[in-house]
Image 1 (cartoon, helix red, strand yellow):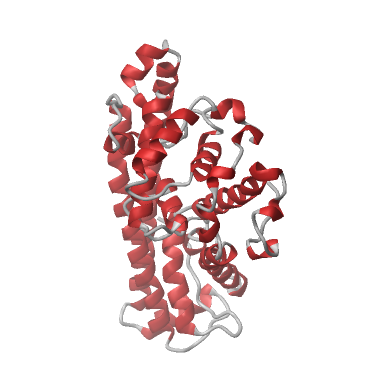
Image 2 (cartoon, helix red, strand yellow):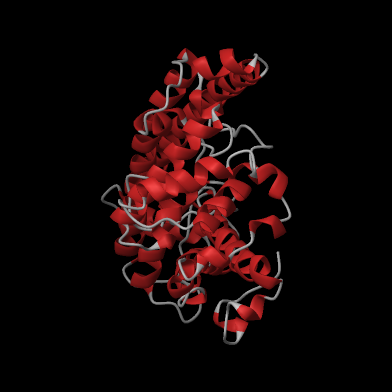
Length: 362
């Protein structure tokens, strides 16, 4: 198997150890869709100077880390407005009031019931439903989430909803552990590779990959063989990950077709198979779920929204660009509607410069 090679030089004004740490982190980023990981094993010409690639890698890594900090800074004063006088909001002014009526009575009762777990903002739940499913109009996701609140089957079941078992989905779910293991292998191998490059270069800098490989060959001690072996193991790990991802995708596509068939059934038959389609039961489940997430996150909506969107087992904000963007859209939309549903003026609810929140009209 022919293996492309990786960084062998240093970007200007960049500490070598700092680069190694950045490269290690990049391994994780490549698994979550940033494309950074292709830098490690794909399309790197042996005559190419790596400085531009290193700069790109560093920039993408830093951007992702900075975006989480910026998100929290952007909405730093949000918490004091989340629950402030929600009783004054007039939801008849809501653009999608007609769709809201399909579940608003259940939402009101569920918030009253489950606020004993942790206070839940009605407007926030409305915005979540809007962003997740366009208030029920976009019924399914590629990951197998369904209907108004976009629960995946296991989350729905955990919250007490009946969701009929499906062989394709269960098989696809089994691939998650395989993908996690592959991701872990890739991350460890990238760390091993970056440490090897750091130690083997011994403080030297190289104009291109060819020079570095020549240097390794001259060092002896099978250094070049070690280098190529790590690269091959890394490439094999990437192949395993890609193969499992493709298999999972095919299974989820079949499950999506299955959900569409269920949705075409008469309502009574449909909800017997999947209670995610039941607005009343699903809304109660969604509010209970959010109240639980907020309790675990100690009222931090950034973390609660991250758990809702990405991984409800981990309280910290997931470093996924899609999740960060999703949270930003929800909070921005929330702030806009908070003013709009009072009297149409954003400034009436936010009694200070809107730059505090980085507000932009959706």
